[in-house]
Structures are given as C-alpha cells and as structure tokens.
Image (cartoon, rainbow, N blue to C red):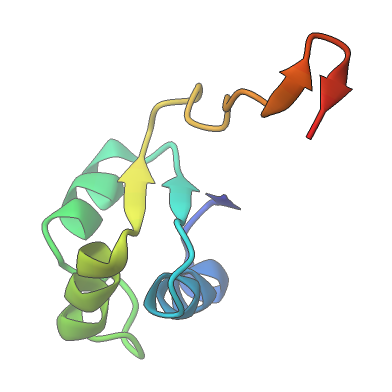
Amino acid sequence: MVVGIGYVRLLPACHFSAAGFNVVDFGIDEDRMADLRDGSSHVDDISDCDVARALEAGLEPTTDPTCHSRPTPSSSPSRPT
C-alpha cells in the first residue's frame, strides 16, 4: 500500500506494480485519484504511458480509507499463517 501519491510516491508505486506487486494507492484527492485511474499522470517525470502500464499491472488508486483492511490468513483463530 502506498499512502499519498505525490511526486515522491508515484514512481515507486509504478515500479512495484510493474514488478508484479499488487499496489493499492490511497489518497484523499478524488480528482487526482480519478485522473490516475484514467491513466493520467500529474507528475512531469512520469508519463501517462507509465501510469497506464502500472494500472494494467495492478496499480489501484483509491480514496476508500478501508482499502488497507485485508484479513490476515490463518490456519486457526489464534494462529496467523
């Protein structure tokens, strides 16, 4: 998960997605997240093409604050795996 997707965090988010990691990006700016979901970069050094490739690879920009809530896999109620 990447929190905030400004100049510093967009590039690693794109690279992690390209490397095969599922990357969820949480941001509070709905317009910026919508632009990213549409494949549009707001960072001069990162092209729209880079963003589009990251989206195809699994980058998920969202403003949903519950996006980080994922269950912990477990083999029993008291034993995470």
